[in-house]
Length: 336
Image (tube, rainbow, N blue to C red; front, top):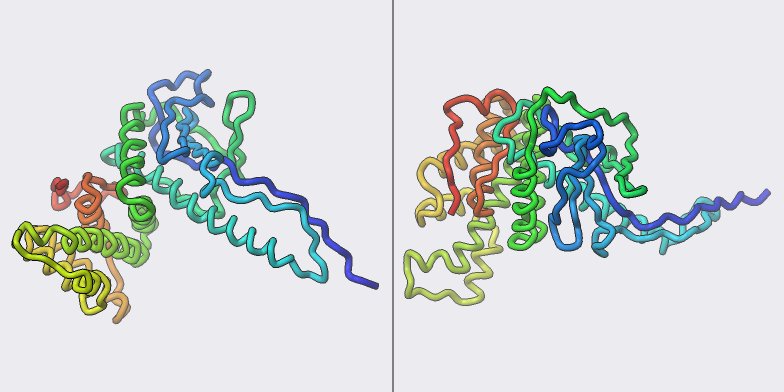
């Protein structure tokens, strides 16, 4: 008997995604029951991608008008002899890649909102392929489809005002404009580091924090090689080949880049000390499996926040856990 042919229905392009925006906070200034499902603030986070902040503590990001982020429609197809047509597999892979990028963008939105809060004891789970929620605009209201029940938090918790949401979306627009792709990746990864620390996964926190720190340092290094060195020697010039070598040669390790940035005045003594400390923690874990404690993980998270703030030109910190209240971690403003 021949194999049965499986008919798979068409799937439309991806439209909007939703995520739990806050924990122990409320979005917007109005908490009246009639506004519970309403939009308290909306604003673009990047061209043709608006975010809608709902009074029910959810944020919806509408990707449908951005062709690079709306995913692709997959036509109806048949699985014959257990094989999916090659052109369909390509569309499925592309759709999956788009979903991953969207999850990073959604997590970056959560990070920017939390960064406006100042301090919080708990942050929500980063957005990933298993907890991303679909959203649809029905009769002028956003309907969110979640695999789990979405329950608004009680009114007793503090409020994230509209002004904070305006600053958060303005920060995201700046990242998209000045640091396309890498800016969202950095703050999304920093948020994930904070979440790992919250779960007492200190090694996971360190791994994420080190990636953030090194990538942010690479931004500073590139700026220094392209033009920053002229502050120390305004009459010097650099050939194209030499610049390429400085940017890509593996001999310029993270440690060497850090020391050069410190000698040139990009890092101050306090910051290079923090960077070196995290690098030693990372090496001790990667090479000798030396585990971390809570304070060391927090130091790594703090250093990553400081370097990324300096690289992105705006102070940006995500607070998670009681250790942020330690006077040892009083923030220093590293804006340039």
